Length: 170
Image 1 (cartoon, helix red, strand yellow):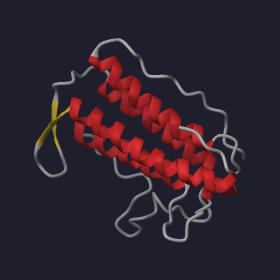
Image 2: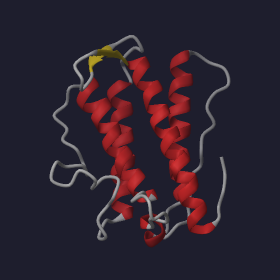
Image 3: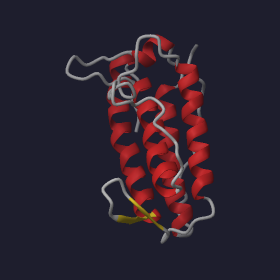
Image 4: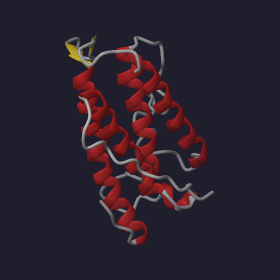
C-alpha cells in the first residue's frame, strides 16, 4: 500500500468562530494525512530517530484515540473504549506493532474523525462536559486543545517525513 493523496482544506479567513475553529481543526487533520501521502507501509512505520519510537503511523493511531477520548467519551459520554491504547500496552497507539496495517489504521482514523464531527455537530461552543480530571470544560476549549494537539504532532510529522525522504513543508 502507498498512502493515498490527500488534499488539505485551507481554514477560512473570515467567518464565525465555530466555522473558523472547525476549519483550523480540519486543516491540521488534513496536514497529518498530507505528511503521509505517497509513503509505503514500511515508510509509514519507520522510526527514523533513535531517541523516540514516533512514526507517522503511530501519530495517526494516537490521534484516532485522542479524538475518541475527548469527543466521544468525554463530550458525548459514550462507552467508547480506546482503539489502540490499552493499559497492557500503553504505547500501542504511538508505537504500533510490526504487523500494524496502515490501510486499516487510516480507515479507523477517518471513521473516528467523522464520528467525532457528528458528535459535536449540534452542540454549541459554550456547551460543557467533564474532563478526565473532573473539571468542567467547554467545547470551545476542546476545539482549541485539539488544534494544539494536531499542530504539535504535525511538527513531529514534519521531522519524521523529512528524515524518511527529504520532503519538507509547512
